[in-house]
Length: 297
Image 1 (cartoon, rainbow, N blue to C red):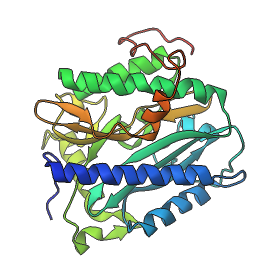
Image 2 (image 1 turned 180 degrees about the vertical axis):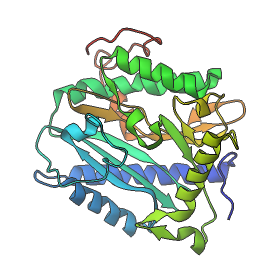
Image 3 (image 1 turned 90 degrees about the vertical axis):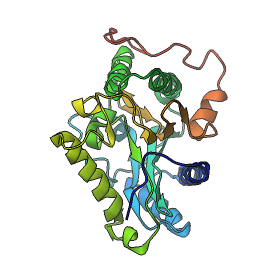
């Protein structure tokens, strides 16, 4: 019944890496199959069917598809509004596909930010995520607190003249733990395909941290429960921002040890997309310093 969330050996890390890759491959497959008029619900259902064929029957959160302005979490976007709707896909729309399948007891959480047809603003915004990926890792290595790292990311987002969308995520998270549990049948019990074991564990750890019973929050955000140096473990990191109804993000696993940190895999869709750009197309600058004035892109 135990949950492994702090220290992983090479074999366990290899499993998480393989499962993360499999999840990204599935997101890319569905992205290629999108058609005009398809609804978010139909895209999310297609993701579930593909994961089901791989032996996935439980999720940390169910697959999500966001089209158009919903990629930007507009207005007072509620924490459950990311669930798929009947919104139909149109050419030129931004798209986010997000899935957190549980493979053999291992949680992975992945997100693909793309478009259906060309979208000039998305083309401009997406490469800017590279600076966030670099800076977040660098600041973890420097030993900044999780709270400081999120607040620096927020300042950088405002420095782009953008809106911080990850503060509208459940838990207001820039990142959260991912973990593993023994692949026993009782750990596969679900409610609406959500894993009771995994979701209940994260909820309990979150409540315990907020109440002050434990200093071990699974959430990485701008709150006091994240005012500590990075905890060892596996963290799904997901910076997310938007301008003028176009949202961009990535989500992937970072490995944090007692004395180091690194991304679990660099062979991922968003990283490869940035590598394919000409130097002039990429965002060469670092993230804006805290308190920087917003500017347009």
